[in-house]
Image 1 (cartoon, helix red, strand yellow):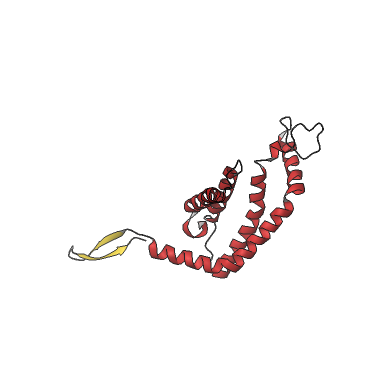
Image 2: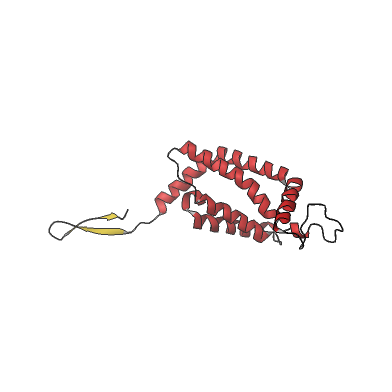
Length: 173
């Protein structure tokens, strides 16, 4: 949706889709705001992608974009639970967050935590995103582009003829 309708609508669609589906499926919990922001950012950044000249290249770009966000989304979702993953741990094992860590140590610990706990899940998500975009993205893009073309509105401007009479009306470009 973001790639067709733009970044603002992409963010709204992503975030609100997760919110509505959480209420329908009972998936409301402390992870929901992170899921909403993550999917909202996917839609937002999809709106920043260039519209490539050929449809095939656009589809390949969206597949690569989906694969990249498969990893980023997992990394974002880890943030809601990472600080609470090992409360009361006596020694530093290099995985968990502690208030005494420096910025560099925090990044190092998070990187290790990510590699150990969720890299494989995110790899499956990334591959699944790419495969789904390549198989279903073409028809979906065509439907969304057709909907956008048929139901969008552009203001009209008057063009005056030689004698000051209205010659015709045309959309602004």
